[in-house]
Length: 202
Image (spheres, rainbow, N blue to C red):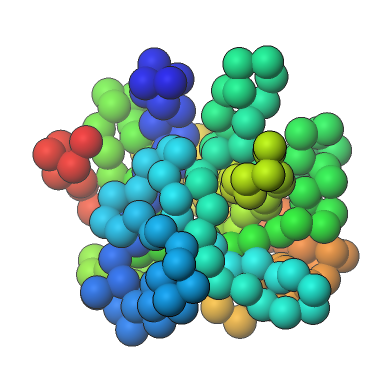
């Protein structure tokens, strides 16, 4: 697992969840933990139990799921799904059609070719940044994967992929409207601020 995770850090393989820094995220954290979910705070890595928002039985739910779908006989972690192919690939297609979710984050990390981490958000201070994702059930456990897309100019200098980012007012549409979600897979991403990350985080 450690060897696999090391490879995956090269593409959208870490993000932050800092509920203490922002009221919007704090409310999500409190809703999840009050229901008994364990939520990883601070640095979130593959296979951590992270805060998520999804729809079930016509209701919006807040809770936590482990980050990474399972694939193959060795249960390899799949933490990313490409927006260009998520609707067609067998591992992702059914989840995209019926089981979309959202990751509330305090920004994400990308790693350059020298394996140096850069943190991205709307500004230099932590604020709520929402990432589109999907989920599936494996042996009775719900697990999730975030979506990636082509990078805009904010991210392209660091990496050739970036997460598929939703505005707050787009969350309900992503969760409820499959046609809207399919069209959004080609959406332009917002301008972000890049901040070099401290190596001690890893």
